[in-house]
Amino acid sequence: MSTQSMCHVGLARLASLLSVRGVLRDAERGEWAHWLTGIARSLHAIDWKRDDGIEMQHRWPFEILQHLVVIPADAIATSDRADALELLQQAYEHYSADPLADTFVWRVAEVDAALRKHLGEADTHVRMVRRQYEALLRTARFHREQGSALVAQHFFRQARKLMERQRQYFNAAEVDELQRLEREALGAAEAAGEFKEIRGGEVTINLDAFDLRQDTAADTVGLLMARRHAAIPDYAKLEEAASRIIRDHPMQFLFGTTTIDRGKVVGEAITEEQHRRRVVQQQIAIQAQLVGLEVLLTLSRAAGAGQITAADVVRELELLGLDPEETETLERGIERFLAEDYISAAHILSSQFENAFRKKLAEVGVEPTRFRTLPDGSTRTDEAALGDLMHSTTPDGRTVRELIGENAWQFIDRTMVAVDGWNLRNKFAHGLAGRREVAPPVVSVILHHILWLATLKVEPESTDSDESVEAAAQNEAGESSSQAANEPGTPW
Image 1: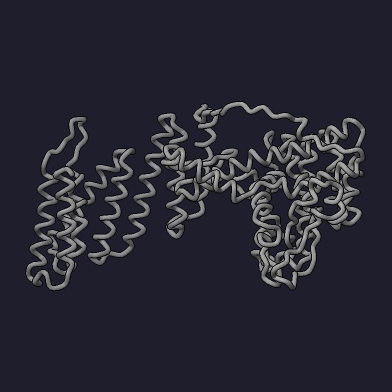
Image 2: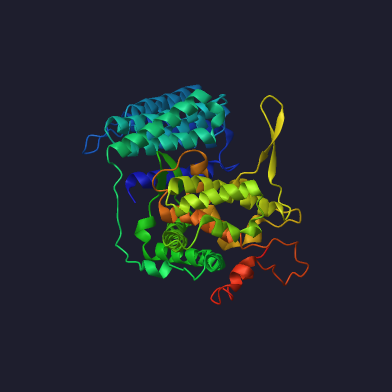
């Protein structure tokens, strides 16, 4: 431990002792306050410079002056108060002149606010927050001017986090301005090639193994439907694998990770649990494409050989409970999929899955609508969006997560809903989808969800707690394949 650190620790322990009632007589408190400010003045008077020329005379005074708050305010002489606040102001001005000294500005702002509050001043907290905010902006703008847009984005993001924690001190114009600065920094980083693409090793896949065509269209669709439940990734195993990856490669997870998608931050990983979620998402993304390949290759090859049509597929989806108009729309989406028009197919199928999922949940009592009060005081009723549905419950208290099982819930959430996942529902609904989202294996995952949903038989809550209600993974579709006959159903 350096001499300076030892002095700092010693002063901290002394301050802790002085704060105990009875240790000092009333007359001695003012003397100790004078002694502390005297040390700060003396250290500030020394012309301290490191070998690299960095001035240090402001470094230790604020560390010492933070201990004045343990001495009653009425015991601190007016001259000592003035000296202490002046030293802190000089330290603030010194560090504010350096755009890379944001950490020191933060500490000085904290000490200054604590002392001013201790001395009875008002509005000390907003003073501190605004100083910290301005320090982050200075650092961000410095890096932006130096051409490090990605580093600038980090500091703009930190400023935004501070702003959200202390929202009462900022107006709407400042919020919008900061949002714009971060967005532009990300765009500049992408344009300048600051993001580096990292590729792993290649994997060879036998595509024929994903072709499940049968002798008839009905049998082909039936086998696909029967395999939907087993095709869903096992979430517990994914979490175990993620924990193992983090354990085996700890250096990769020492630092925070930011997930960026189309010019905005969609996720951050700082804690071990957050890193685990990110790794699980990566694993789900890989497995989801394998799930999609099975649907894609089976149906596209069958359609190419004239063995199946969209009508053949829709004919097997009676359990979705769609009306004629909804059925026609779904059939059009599947027809576009079989015609390899994946852009059109994705937009139709994503909305049709949400609609079918909403109808299925309504059958067990999940409320499919949401009451809204508008700013003008009027009201309306909206259809519940997929994200709302995923977190809904039945009248008897069962959550959707419990109804469809953890594996299915996670798979739908990570591919259709989660912002740090594929987020397909929102991207297609709001015009944010690009080439990645309309890749054939990705679009096929949406069709997988529809086929899976069509295997579910919704029944009233079981009266026997030891029995789970079987899904139609073992109904007509399940019976079409001996391979699928032993696969577990999904409890409702």
